[in-house]
Length: 338
Image (cartoon, rainbow, N blue to C red; front, side):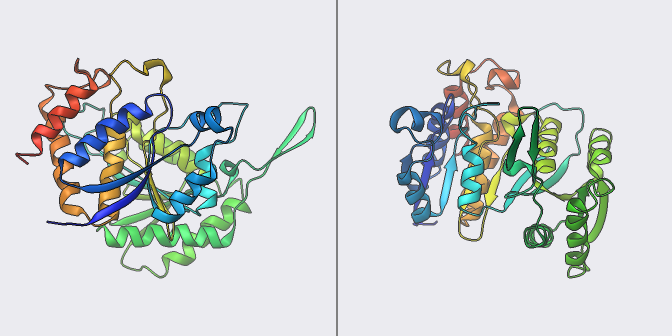
């Protein structure tokens, strides 16, 4: 049994963030993990309190601890401050976003054989928000693709496949239209693939990928793609396994990692006690695997999946009538038998 004590930065987020954080921390504590949580501000709540969406104290904490568990942070649509998520990814060079999508027994979906992982380049492309106002009627949005970032993410995808016993890496682009930018990404994939002869390679256009995913998702294994495509397709794949409420996510850099729920802050259900903590809990499980607490990660995962499989104590979004606290308590009860 590990006796390690971990120092981890905690961003409780906005809306339902503090609620799901409370439940996830209770489960982690019940598993026997010893974690010193450095609670920091970010997003709308930080702006309201100190006038800065990403305070220096938060940056310093992350620089020191190098591991973050992060709840949803509100990003205004079409106005207001820029995405805190994007700022964090840029500042800490979190170049890879990992989004596993695998069916969970007990959650009914149109498909029962989904088991794929999206590896998304996380620092550039249109998603980086590089925009320029030319005049009142014209905006230029810059699609930034570099060879170094493209090679790095493709190499990461092949290493991920190799380390996780995956059979294939498929690259998704729109290189038939974006011949320079997406063309470079595709060419980088082809070059990197030569270093991994034991892994199958595949190429697909992003629009065809979307169609194929909703027809036969089981044909895909590891998918690698530029930032914006990855953002869109990863949410599509979350829909294949039950929605954003159960999706997990990890942002990995060379010296830092942030694990976060991918759903929104849901201010409409704030304080009602019904916010499902599953997405953040599954992201925390990825965090435990990252710090090599694999035994506890598996124990928590098994307890969660047992509760979902039994279907007796589920939150409203999963088709049940239980509160988030009741759902959490049931997972903690299951820790003693899994």
